[in-house]
Image 1: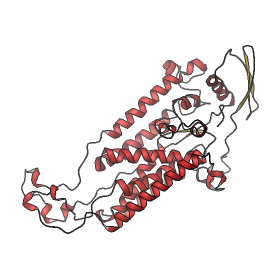
Image 2 (image 1 turned 60 degrees about the horizontal axis):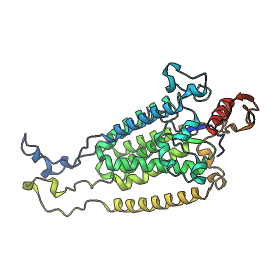
Image 3 (image 1 turned 120 degrees about the vertical axis):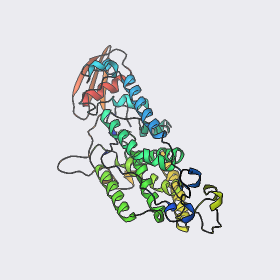
Length: 387
C-alpha cells in the first residue's frame, strides 16, 4: 500500500439488531434430585450453570474508549488543519467532515496507532496490526455503535460463560476478521471491532446448535438469530464497509463456539454440584456424541484456516486474484453507488521550502510553504487535497 493512501475502511455495527444469549432449561426443572428441599438453605439448591459477574466486557469498552481519546490526542488536528470540527476541544478536535465524516482522526494517525495496513503487515512484518486494529475506531459514531453492540451482546455472554472463554472468542474472532480482510482488501486501511463482534454472534449461533438439547423454543430462537445475522451481513455490501472482516469474524466465532461454549447435555449433573444427600449413581455422559464430533471438526477447521490464511498473507497473496466474484461479498455496485474507491495518491515536487502536491485521483494541485516536510505531514496534506 502506498504511503499516500488515505482511505479509511471502517467496520460499522448496527446496535438495534442485537440478540442476547438464550436462557437454557435448567436440569433442575426436570430432575427430582436437583430441586430445592428446604427453604432458606441455598446449599440444598443445585445450580446447573455458574453465573459470572461481568467485568471483562466493560473493561474492553473502557480500553477502546481510552485508546480513542489517546488517538485524538496524538492526531492534534489544529496542528495540520485550520478547519477542524469542534475546535473548542483543542488538540482533541476532529478532522474536517470532508476528510472524516465520522468525527475522528486522520487516516495517517490511525496508521501510526496500529490500523490494519496490508503493506506494513506483509513487507514490514508488523503482524501485530491484525490485533491492534480491532481496538481502534475511525470516529465518535463508529466507536459509539460498536461499544453499544459489545455491551448488549457481550455482557450476557460473559455472565453465561465467563471472561476467559468470551475473551478468547472475542480476540481470536477479531484476528480472524482482520486476516480475511487483509487477504481481500489491500488498498485501504481498516479499523474497528466489528469482526470481533460478529464473532460473538457466530459463537451464539454455534452455541445454540451444539447445546441443542437443553433449549426450549429452539427453532424460533434459531430463525431469529439467523435473521439478525443475515441483516447485519447484508449491511456489509454497502460501499466503504469492510464486510470481509464481518465474514471472517463470524466464521471464526462460529467455529470457536463449538469449542468454547459447549455445555453438558440435559440431565447430566456433576457430583460436586449436588448436595451429598442427593448424590446417586449416574451413567449419563457429560456430552453427547455429536458435540464431540462438532468440537473436533471445529478445531481442525480453525487450525487449517488460520494456518492457510497466515501463510497466504505472508506471501502477499491477493485473494481477489484467485476469486473473481468474492469482491461482491463486500460491496455490490448499484445505480445508487459505486464500489470503486477513488485514487488517493499524490505526486509531489519540492524546491527549497515550497512543496507541490497533485492528487492523482482528481488532478487537483496545490503549493505549500513547508520546509523539511515529513512523510506523515505529506500524507496528511494529500488526504486533505484529495478529500
